[in-house]
Length: 160
Image (tube, rainbow, N blue to C red):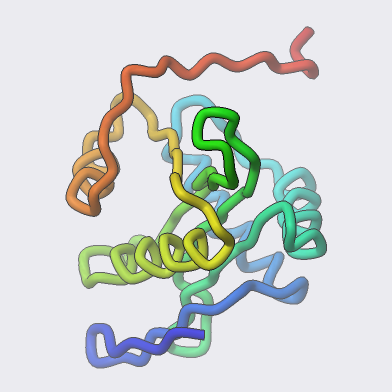
């Protein structure tokens, strides 16, 4: 657990637990509503969050809490890279409640995610943002992420 003082409020960042899933689904609804390619689906998001929380070797969800509620989350998934020859992380979801943005919560959550990835032996973190989400791209660049020339492609078995 990491404690910070933020906007004169105590910010706590720690691993999410199963009881947090409904609030985390609310955060994912915010995230997926602002992303062009995704649509919120509480049942699917809850199933995915439960699987991650119950399978710590597959990944982790860090939650940020203040004022007695969850105000942000970041999700890391772990895999093996043949390029690095070791463990790497995929930053799958990161979201902060709109009323808590701009005060450093995201930066602290991202640092906690970097620290967690390092503790797990990961030498790289990869993430995707919407091409039109220049605010997120600027945020990640400010925190030492570099744009890749790799092009994201996806096969959706449910669509075929």
